[in-house]
Amino acid sequence: QQPVQSPQAVILREGEDAVINCSSSKALYSVHWYRQKHGEAPVFLMILLKGGEQKGHEKISASFNEKKQQSSLYLTASQLSYSGTYFCGTEPAGSWGKLQFGAGTQVVVTP
Amino acid sequence: NAGVTQTPKFQVLKTGQSMTLQCAQDMNHEYMSWYRQDPGMGLRLIHYSVGAGITDQGEVPNGYNVSRSTTEDFPLRLLSAAPSQTSVYFCASSYQDVSSYNSPLHFGNGTRLTVT
Image 1 (cartoon, rainbow over the protein chains, first blue to last red):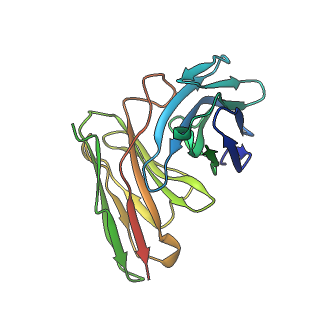
Image 2: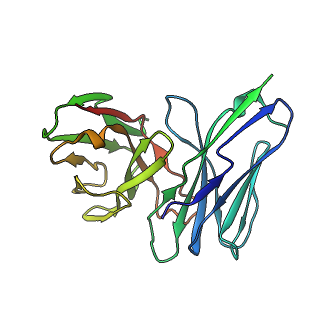
Image 3: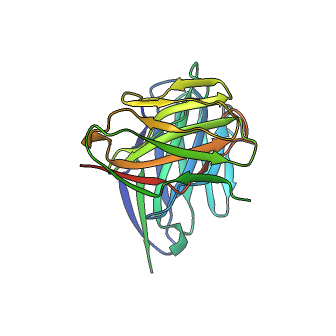
C-alpha cells in the first residue's frame, strides 16, 4: 500500500518555509525522500531509518516518527531551485526491499 | 561513469505487441527495481531484485516479467501490451538493501511508452 502524502501541492515565495508529510499504515524500516524536476528522473535527497533521526540536505531536513509511521520534510528558506515534485518512499517492515512511493507533492517556488 | 542506462527512451507499441525495456547499471549495485509513473499516482513499484537470480513482485506486477541473470542488467518484459500500460518507466538501482544510509536509489532517465 502506497504511503499518503500531504499536501498535494504548495506554492511558496522565495524565503518561505513549507512542510510535506508522509504517512504509512504499516510499520516501516525506512523512509526515503526524492525530488523530481519536470521531465527528469527523481533525485535522492535523504534516507531516514528507525530511531527518529533527523537528516539534512542543504536547507532541507526531515524527521521520522517511528511510532506514528510518519515522516515530514521541511523546506526552510525556500529557493527557486526547490521547485519540483517531492516523493516519499517507504519500506514496510516485513517487506524487505519493497520501496513504495507516495503520489507526490508539487512545490512551486516563486520569486 | 554511466550510472543507470535505460533504452529505448521512447517507444510506441500496438496493442498485443511485446517488447523488452532494457536497464543496465555499472555501479555493481545489488538492488534493482522497475517503477511506472502515471500522472497523479506517483511511482508504482512493478518488480524488484535484491541480487542476481532473485526477483520479487511489487505493487503492479501484472502484465510484466523480469529476470536478473547478471548483476548489471534487469530487463522488463511486456508480454502483450495494453493501452493501460502507457506510462513512463523508470529503472533504479542501489548499493544494497534500501534500509541503509548507503542505499539511495539511482534512477535511469526513463522510457516513455505509448500503447495504441
